[in-house]
Amino acid sequence: MTRGARRDDDPAAMPPPSEPPRTFDAWSLREAAQALLLVTAAVETGILPLLLRRAGSAAGVAAELGLDGRAVRLCLAALEEIGVVTPETPVTGTRSLTDFGRRRFADPASPSTVAADLPVWRATIPGWLFLADVLRAGEPLPVDSRSAARAALYASLDAKPPARVAALVGRVLARTAAARPRVLDVGGGSGVHARAFLARGCRVTLLERPDVLAHVRGAFDLDGGRGLDLVEGDAEAALPEGPWDVVLFADVLHELPPDRAARLLARAAAVCEPSAIAAVADTFSGRCAGAGFLGVTLLLHTRAGEPHAAADVQRWLEEAGFADARIDDLDPVHALITASRGGSRAAG
Image (cartoon, rainbow, N blue to C red; front, side, top):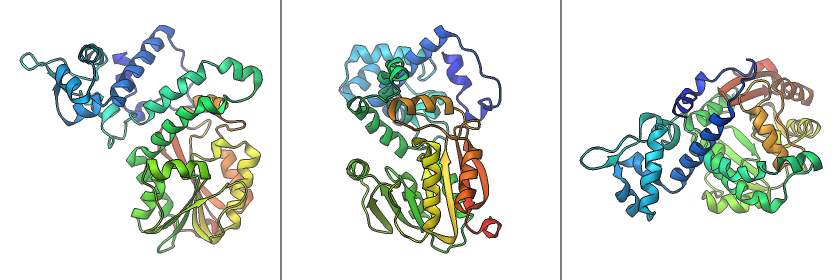
């Protein structure tokens, strides 16, 4: 597991999706899954965040976090085996995070961190146990079984790597000539992108379903004011009138089948300024790593969602009246497509 964990530590080292699919060793994957569950527990109970701040002994970590001493001691020994924490120091018995452990699982500013994704991954595991039932029925899991996964998903989306968020916002704003762009963040969830646009001087309207806004308002201290408006609504039913300089769909289109995704982009064109920018950020099939597994996750939790090919999204944008569609890779698992109502006349 240590070799596998270190091999994928750098996202840039991942093979491009165009390479032939890799075979896998079932036993190694079992050990990898156990290791990830161990790391997830160490993140959720605060062990790794504590060791990010300072070194600590098993007894000291357990006492500070209110955990069982024996359990912490045994788990730290296992975390050492997979290269996440250092061996005990001879005199004090303290441990620290390894550089790998810090960058991959603890430091929220690290571009290679997956810490925020671990709880949502763990929350979705029970659903995968019933994949055969979903294959037979063609229906997603019952709503009650998805509630824990949804809460973890919101937290994961809010903790997107800062470098990815900054790259998205920077590339979108590079294509608009508006001095203080009016941004419509469709399905903006916790507001992770809305806050970044606000920090760049934009005026932002975040559109979300009432049930989502009810959760994120409290969970992420998201409130209107200071250039941010929160609007309850269903994007497929209607979009706020605007007019908008930027319309953002971040991790939204994959929840819709192709025909509905295309209609949503056409609806966006109708509420835009003549030179507005449409931005679609997603995990695109055939281009981004992990699109296949995202598809199965959507199978478990939606009735019609699926990852879309970048070429399809570009075509839908053109059919909606946008032009000069450009695609940029934000990281190995996410890409951004931008297109302008003004075509090649847009700043770029």
